[in-house]
Image (tube, rainbow, N blue to C red; front, side, top):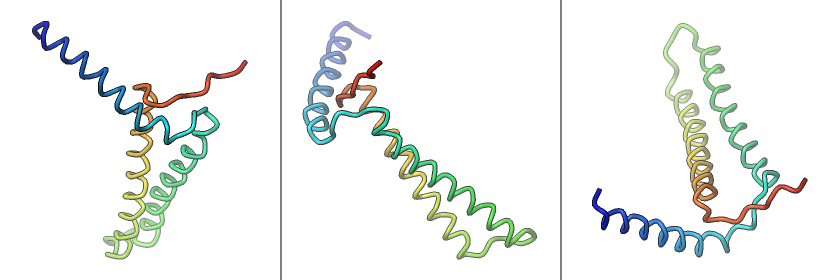
Length: 107
């Protein structure tokens, strides 16, 4: 990659960070691991509901295809889980890219 392109990419990253940080950081209080635990717990519950629903369908329909209603319920569980995972991934990106202040761990 030519030097000018590298410089542009570095500047682009700097500007992107500044813009994201100026918009996101004021909206979300400084985070700690304790602040994230309820979010992680919520995602775990959604994952459990999705997998549990699969087992329930298998229990009720071991030798047949699931009903449309069963698939509809399973799909709803998956969509909830997928949406929460996408949101947590976005949060991880926000933290990794330093768009948000995080509390330092006290010892």
